[in-house]
Image 1 (tube, rainbow, N blue to C red):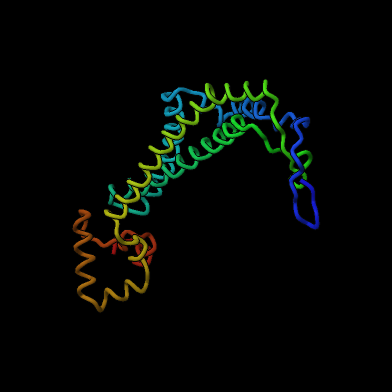
Image 2 (image 1 turned 135 degrees about the horizontal axis):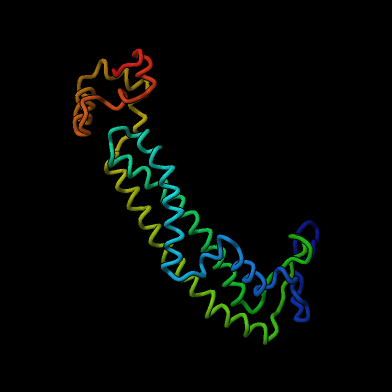
Length: 228
């Protein structure tokens, strides 16, 4: 590309040009395979799922205490909330893996490769010689594309699980749990018997006789350390 009047203009394609070594698709693939995270995609389906399961376990170890604090004495709600956090982390990792391998796959399969000679402002194009193009296509078909397909399947499964968990959470917890800690809501309880009765029914459904706001440490402190 050339800068004409502040506008980047792509240079005419020159088949004699050679893309810098670190931007050649073959070398990008080698770098991807050696990366501690991206290298996971080389595993078979069982190995990949096992590694992702470890990430999920760590994420859940953090999410469960948060969920149980947000939804005290409400195990289904707490587990669903924790699962949203755990699957959210897992989904982000899977998307990162897929995007990296899919990017290299596209560059290996392309006849013309875009590259930067020294920076974003002087991009150009490289026309692959026949022998390099044949090698890249073989690598893409037999090594990279299978990894992309595995990641696509795993990503779809995680995405589906995340969506189902969110839907389940909205069914089980239709209301904002923090809404019951709001001063406006608490003041409304004093003058509206219908809302107060509804809160009592929800508390009974959870297996307790106390509304959600009674589980708050703040309101326990306001009551002198005891339960309201």
